[in-house]
Length: 384
Image 1 (cartoon, rainbow, N blue to C red):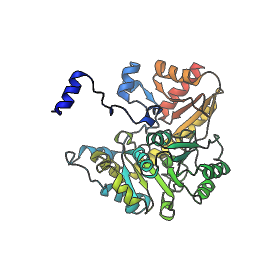
Image 2: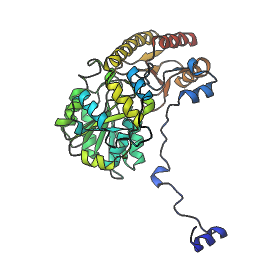
Image 3: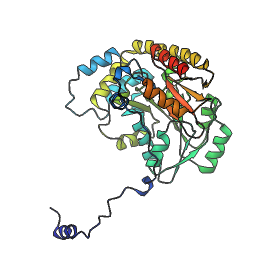
């Protein structure tokens, strides 16, 4: 029951609570455009989910591993809060990455860790450096937390300009730079020389290795990952995820390797029960089923090569070489947005469309199963 004077003001209609507004910097925040799930798409397109070819979100078309599926059916304590420190998972991750358990923290997807890092390290008004075109959550979370985005644009199929990075860092003194390797949406790997130079500068480098397992660096990207360098670098953070290679996108589970000085603050700041029981058990089981995942990743990499060759044979598309589980293409004739819409509405084939600086009339195609690629190529040839 509110105090009498509040009741009187509300009854008379003279009280306008000043708290009924969002923070001012959020009023013009550009929204992030997420990808929708099968049940929503099925309703919208009027198609059964089995008749939809989903190549728009870089999901693993082969799903979760047998051991992960079995673990989900045998959950013992879903009614009990999860371990706030994810100890079982972090120990399994330590064995997998050869990074000490004490330097690893799990999150509800790498997205949670991106947001957490910005909240911890960036004061309102301070700068975060990104190199677009790249993953949109870096800019979204920075703006959400009242930071300012500084950009050094990259040219597709060319290394990031180190002179431009040096000049920008010197002028604006950003605290963090976010770099995806392989980069989303073009699938390019970060040049080792660029990283080595960055780590000599007064900036924290956050490497997002969401797709590293698909790179041509060992069976699960072991030789191209920089995660073990975190132990020797105070200004390096590496983020990874189970969404792609392990097929756990729907369970939201990721992790990061962090330098010693940052770990205590991360533990204080993260949500106590951020990794749910199902996600944790599925992730641990996935790490116990690596032979299965190596076979799937090898299959996807082989299909990526085949799909790239098929797309290259279409004279009105320009595909870019990729080290991830997707291929970016420039549409040389016609409008990419119309192509996206036609594929979805008439054929039930979903791809990602971009219309932003550096990516006008571009589409991104996730690597699916061979039959998915065949259906896509058949329709692309038919449309033209």
